[in-house]
Image (cartoon, rainbow, N blue to C red):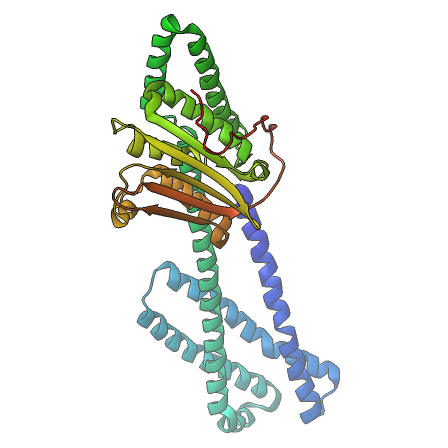
Length: 379
């Protein structure tokens, strides 16, 4: 916060130097006009130009302060206009008074009065116009700055929200899954110790993956890593669900090195198990697909469950699916797509398309050869 405040003060000082420099051309133009119309020597014309713009520049500082005061007090539009009309008229007449005083200092009061009668109306209108330009510019600059700050706050809020949802996803091995898995492993220890040992290794690999991603604050993993994690997850679910859970993969080997946001597939798979497999006596089949399409990586998780009405799904999408979609939209913008296809008794499919990118990740991808199309992952 202290660093931010010091940066803001430095930028503020820089802006005032720019403001002062912006008046230099006006002083030069005025001096040039005096040298051509009144044949004043250049040095006197420059001095006259300087004293001409200094009052206006000082008025501008006052206008800036006044516009800030009105905004801090949240004045409505009518109040702002009325205040500026009154202050603008006052400053216009004050500027006229300064001009008359300067003339009086050179020619006397009578000469200044005679000159004032000739240019007073134009001088007041000119002063009021200059004030309006300064006021409009002040409010426009403040509005643009507040808009940028609002956008920055919104971006920070969105980033914090996405970070919280990502943290939730990283910890999404929910208690039911953990308790069910531990209960299943406990039963297996005495009955099938070899299977229990193998399952414990996969359970440890899952926890290690989540902890490594969280500890390193990794946003990206390879598709191979994510699939390894998903397969461990499915193998443990198959311990609980048995033959009721069937998994088929169609994975393009060329896609395994593509980088994707961590924990992109697991929430989609968990959603399919929760709604399409676990509640049904006959269970169901989950299909995982990944392929390259030109410059895009296409991912799909499909099940043959009961499906649902699309409007009902859009209104009731859970946190996992919503967080995945929002992460992809925030990360890739219009280059990403997230679509759901479903209907009653026609299953449920989630399709994801993101730019295909091969990059460097923090831990090496495991050796992973995809099963042949149509095979079932063993428990």
